[in-house]
Length: 306
Image 1 (cartoon, one colour):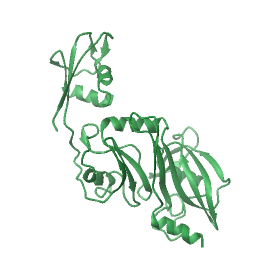
Image 2 (cartoon, rainbow, N blue to C red):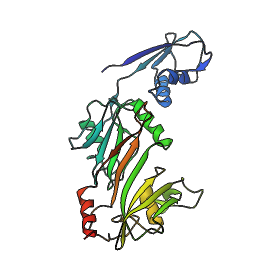
Image 3 (tube, rainbow, N blue to C red):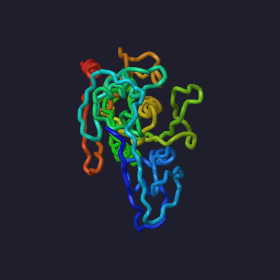
């Protein structure tokens, strides 16, 4: 792979900002990425290097852009088995196991989904100039199930828009302590950082956090527990865990927002991303993927049904 050079001539549309013009010509690149290229002296106008993103172009001028080959991200690929349910040129759908962190962070420098994907998916084209997969949404470490990774810049932007416009439908299965007040419901409660514990989130009064909406319905009732299906309409950190605790039904095994000692013998919380429906880049008909309950969660249900 080598640097790509693209050349365009300003047409009869008239005067236009350089960065805006490039976005219209290279839709697979974000405006921020193109602005960085301009500032990095990777763009010429009529053969002269320019660094001003807001430069006004004139009809007939020739703009040339150098798109550098993606540079190594600095992350070391790790040969960790991944359950890849689907893959094409743009994205990969992965069934993440509980216990795996999605992206390297403090305390989790290795063994992450991103590092496993770097080894398992050799044709990653890179995101924002780096050789890495595009993370559009995340799952908590102890949450299992479906996660979608973008393999190139254009797919990353497309998927980001799908999530932002709430066109992605996600379904989670959760076993909660107790019984929700209604068999079906909608929880609307804002979420923000917990001021007392910076690594935690909290439900806060209106105007102090970000809007968050979760719909749920009961699937099965047990003595002291309820199996629910949760539909997060927004994508806030720890949203389902917080919202279920907010209505008095914390997720079984969630020692952060629920009981400090799990009410059942579990070493993870009972939350699984079971189904996702998403439109692929350039398509209007959604594709739906499903991931069955992991064996350890299915065994819990089997025990409760005896």
